[in-house]
Image (cartoon, rainbow, N blue to C red):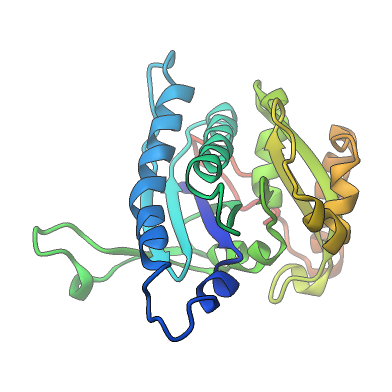
Amino acid sequence: MIRLFLSVDMVGSTQFKARFTGQGSHGWLEIFRAFFSNFPLMLAGQVGFEFIDDERTPSIDIWKAMGDEVIFAAEPQSADEAASILRALLRAMSMYERKYFERVPLRLKGTAWLVEFGEQNIELDIAELAAGDGARHIDYIGPDVDLGFRLSKFARPSSLVVSLDLLEQLLEAGNADALSLHLVGRDELKGVMFGRPYPIVWASDADAGFDFMPWEVEECPMVASASNAAPTDAVRLKDAITDMRLYLRKMHGVDRAPLALGGQAGAGPS
């Protein structure tokens, strides 16, 4: 079983809430309540629109909400389906900002990654947290689950930071041209790839591109670089995946086969 996880987080929320110090939650509570209520509905609408001509519309379920972040889980059956889900998510993020954040200093950023469940990553059915109507409470645990939370620190507004496993799928998708992919740097992720710097790749809607604010460009070198750069060539992105796979095999004796959506697979280069 391979699941796609999608994290959407508010940028600037801590500073925004600090404006109302001494006023309790008055002034900001409704904005955050609206996000957790309305964004999932907007995403569902965009997914429906994206798959309107397809026989199957994938289900996008909320896994958990924590702090100012909501995390969704889906089960794409193909690389094309995964790419379409990301495009729908990017559109929903952009539409939500225009509708609800036009006059507040908040933005949305996203992280997307794949996890294969089996020996290394597991699903945990927590009976004590099950709903009163009998619905199960499933949690997900494992190093590839953790990867997304490590990677999320490199997320920026108007884009998604994607894992190498997911990147590999996107590069093979028949609708890959719906997304623009940018290799913006490399950095070490705690507990990932034995400390080797991990390629940081951002995805944006190919039609819309990035929508960075001027001060975001000024304050972040990665944003400044991406804002003026063409999408990274697919050959270079594939080389980054091949290099990481070679490193794991040569230096650590670890073979990481590509994931295969919709079928049996080994573990990919997360």
